[in-house]
Every structure is written in C-alpha cells, then in structure tokens.
Length: 168
Image (cartoon, rainbow, N blue to C red; front, side, top):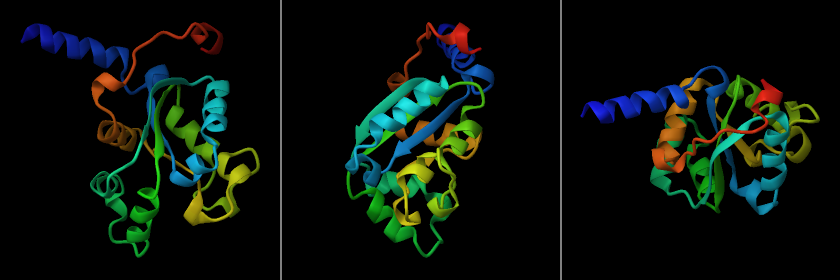
C-alpha cells in the first residue's frame, strides 16, 4: 500500500500540472481529420516546443461526448454538436509544457473563426463556427478533467525530450 502511494506521489511530481509539466487536452474534430489537418496541427505544437505525451484516433461515443460537453448541455446547439462530434473519428492529444493551456488556446484562435487571426489554426483553416476543426482545454482544471475522460493513465507517456534544455 505504501509503495503504491509513493509510486502515485512520485508520478504526480513527474507529470504534475504546473510549470513545464503542465498538460493540456487538444482534439482535432471530425472536420479537421477529414480535411487531413492532423499533421499540420501536430507540427505546430511540436515547433512551438511542446511535448506530445498522448495521442489516439477514436470514434467517440455519444456518452463520452455528452460528458465532455456537459457544461453546454442547456445550449440550443448541444444536440447538433454531439451529432457533429460523433460523425467521424477525432484525434485526441495531450501536450505538455510551460503554460501549454494558455498558449494552446492562443494557437487555436477564437471559437468563431471569423474572429481568429491569421497564423492560428482556426484563422488559417476555418470559415464557420460549426466546423472549427479543433478543441483545446480552456483551463488547467478542465484539462485535467478532459484528459482523464479521454485517456487512461497508462496511455500517457513519461519521457524526457532531448530538446528540453534548448527550450527551457
């Protein structure tokens, strides 16, 4: 029992939620997968210096999507959002790095692509808010929730990047 606790405790400090170990959840939505934008999005995060610690292609169930978008359940577009997100595969990722949640949100652009600047994912690839290619956690707390919803602990990789000393 003590060994298990110590192991979990050590893991928390290796992959905690602050500093260079902060993590964010990012999902390429069905339209982004269909348009073959996954590689470009991964490239942007890697070039920024963030470390990929989890990635998978999934066909999300309605149950999972309802849980993920629970805070939007009373919005008039909720049903169409669930249909859209379950219409094809999504690529879900966990990125790690200093201020990754805040920086990722800036990299993605505004929810409404018309408000997104060129150079952001939505500014470069989106036209309509209903097909905005990508989702990113809006806070460290929501990142924790979303990561635990989409990934089991053993699906997240602990590895040391050789470029870490060149970035931090």
